[in-house]
Length: 153
Image 1 (cartoon, rainbow, N blue to C red):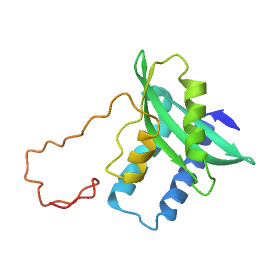
Image 2 (image 1 turned 120 degrees about the horizontal axis):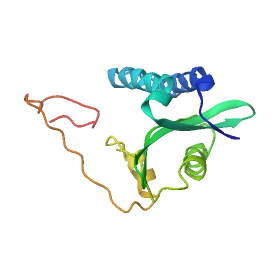
Image 3 (image 1 turned 90 degrees about the vertical axis):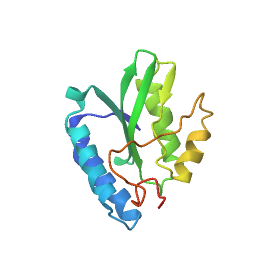
Image 4 (image 1 turned 45 degrees about the horizontal axis):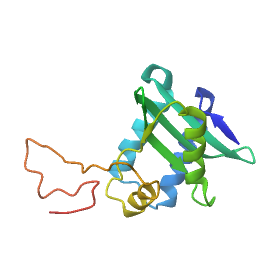
């Protein structure tokens, strides 16, 4: 069942996020920071102009997504998390969110793939009209730092 995300679902979303992290067997600094951002976004959806959706299977939250209207013709999807043990739940939350919350937009911006090949492959499966390369600008030398892009220079 698809439901529009509301404040009563925040605890379920964070529990799903925590399970998503646990399934990865890793709680990196990036995931801790992302968790904070996800929690803030969920708690302040209305003030931030965010709209979300959720998939429930047997009354259990199995996926959620959160985005905003970036331009009148474009919806930007910021967050999408799911219990991958349910086959097809990622495409389902994407499809249902677009069907229910984005019918009046021409373009869906799925944000970055963070250099994760599985995410990149999934995004390419939607036949995007455009993909752009992301650049990082820093006033410090970061050439030796390992980042979320997974490369070490």
